[in-house]
Length: 389
Image 1 (tube, one colour):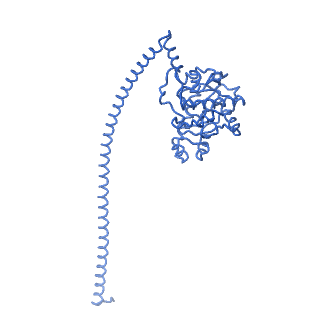
Image 2 (tube, rainbow, N blue to C red):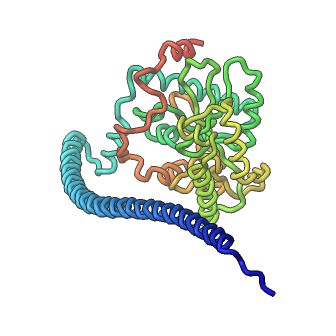
Image 3 (tube, helix red, strand yellow):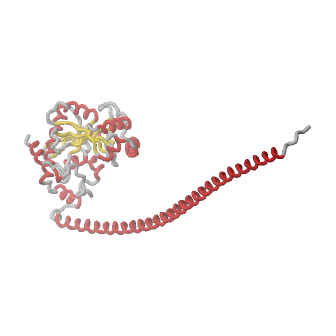
């Protein structure tokens, strides 16, 4: 038999249901408000994003317009440079023709052909004067001492580059040259450095040159005030003097250059910023380790069996071929340089012609020739003191 609920009980349940409904409606209202608030934020965010996208589009259009303007300016600049370059070429041709006429007028007193006149003109160029000549005299004394050491200890060397050119053409320094260049085998350089460790006057220094990605070995006095030095370029023994062997050399050198140009190592960045590092610099130790890993170990010295002489990979890269048959360099011959005789390649004329072409043609860099020592700050007192020793 079912028990009937009383009106009061029914009223209580109805009231409770109404309260529950109100509570649910309130919660629904809160949720709805939150949804509405989030929706509003989302709409605001979308509007902000749309605004940013529009700004980006506007900037992109402006950038494209700027690029178009820049390209047009660049095109005009290139055209202007071409016209200026053409004008300069015309001026240079005019000056070259005028100089030729002056030259022929000045040197036409003898029955000579043009080549003979040109040679006489270059050979009679006035030597350097003033501080430059003092620097050359200091370097000439260094070369004499260097040659004496090589003879005493049976080291092999030969004149090269501008020094060899000067010996052939001027019997001394090229008037605008300020250093001395000699070539030496790697094993003899190592032996020379050991010998000089106990020498009171002379030393071998090592400089790391970022611009050429190379080691620069210099023979100089131990007086840091004396700016004079000899560049000693490294050569190795080889078995192959072919074009293919020289092409391989360039491929290997390119890897060395690429490594340092792409490196982000802090030591390389320091080297890049300074340009030159002495061997005592902490960063130079890292550079040396990298060079040892990048430059293949050269063949063991075997001069009597070698067929070729090759420019060391730790020198700077060169366009002209510094890979020679053994008989191209040896036996060396004697040439006069600043009133003394020094060793020179056996085929010395072919040597300089390979590097310079016509050696009686004045170079294009006669004015802009690289100065190894700042001529405004040459310490002539230190050089004169050395010359008097």
